[in-house]
Length: 202
Image (tube, rainbow, N blue to C red):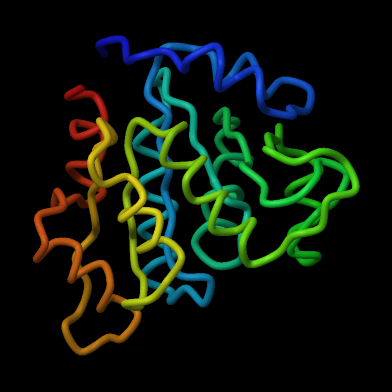
């Protein structure tokens, strides 16, 4: 696997990090966001698990927003396979949001633009999308509605060197309308079978 570009020092110096997060973010392997709907379908959860499994034995680090649905499935798969992953938060490191993911997040190295005591707000979630786009080398959207946060993340990466991919879903499913739209707009078509090669290609 070829080395990827390291994060700029000036960006790293602006971030608040928990134990272990800085080392994972500074490494030169791929930094991969696997994301999608917070109300994930069984299809989406299974695809998330299969994609994380494809990263076993690589030097990739998984990045996550730590939300419900696909993000939670990704974290669970990373725990199961002991794969390195970092949660990028929209609030201070002393908070765990959403509350239902507190146990997952407490076990995960975390990074944030915000100091302790900072609460999550809509504006901060939007700013977090920009940070995720800066940190990632690859973003893949498994399933999402047309206005999902993962679609916003894909758009935030527009014009950067970050590769953006999406998993095709049923044309009858509103859960896949956003990811199918990304494919129509030129995102890379990614499946569990092609995911590892897609990540390793650059």
